[in-house]
Image (tube, rainbow, N blue to C red; front, side):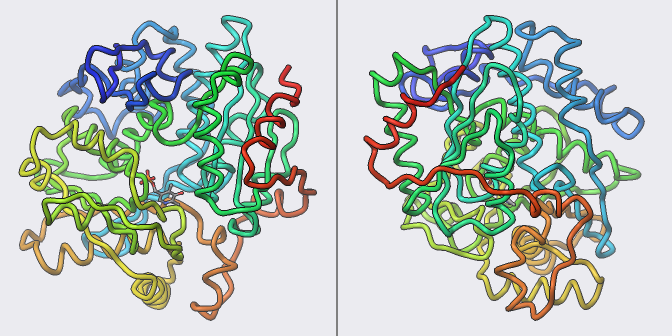
Length: 438
Ligand SMILES: *Cc1c(COP(=O)(O)O)cnc(C)c1O
């Protein structure tokens, strides 16, 4: 399979090139030139097959022969080392927990998968590469853990000083080895600007091989198709039910993978893009203009994105807006609604959602209340992070402590290790050129 740039159909790349470059040379996002079709047999056997076989069959057509089948399979088994529980919280609402990985966020899956593929390509050529990531919290930790000790790869993570939660900071700064953390004296946008500038710096590019590991990289984006099949696997009597997903959306990579799964043949009736007050897409769906505003800080901070990079891929999957609107609706919710929902579900079900999961649930509830007459409908909520990751922000409005899962203290007890840099590009550039990569 080849991937083309969404800025120019003629600009094509192999899976390896698309991963190692991140973006096409014209700065377009890569998109698969063909959409694979899932066989009837695959869909029929979903609940019988194990998760590794499912993931392999989903991702293999995109990789083709650029990585041998047994290596792809071993990358998948390394990636999916944890469970994906489904919890029913109402007659027709189920929660799929995607946060059982090492940093307790669903980004662990894409990050680990990308690390496996990139590590393989670097090893094959006996080459090395530096992965640059700007993070507002979750991405950095997931990338750090996914790429930890992968030969041929050095990871440099930029995070905004005092803007990530305590646990997130620990996850970013305590690994060491090939993971370097930079605390930037600015906000997330400053971090992102530094990274973008580095990618445009031709002198640096000649001296350092650089790539990015944010959600636009196809190796982070495509494995997410898997979540939708995993949810489907839990349904009985699939044929009689209408299945909808509410996806808590920030950069719109996850929901775009769902739309891809549907295009590949997974029978999903509708997608709900649920956002916080950063509501560029909910506004765009109902109006002719796309108009991002400055990003606002919210409780669901991994979705504080004003101009979602992956939305262009969603447009590429739908030839016009009418088709998109039949497939995807979009709602926005406030922090107040988020907290009330977390409180309600705790009181009624003794289930603690995190702010992102609460927004996902709000989307399903609004839709079922206002638009759905079919009692057979099943709505899936994605719980994308463990609530403990946000405990410093939510324990006060919730007026309760969040209990930690067993694996959590591991990072808490380790020492932080990081460099502190200003927002000046020259300083960052110097740092990259000085850092010993091999
Ligand atoms: C990144 C993230 C999201 C948003 O996912 P996108 O693919 O960027 O839309 C939602 N929840 C959590 C916890 C995240 O870390």
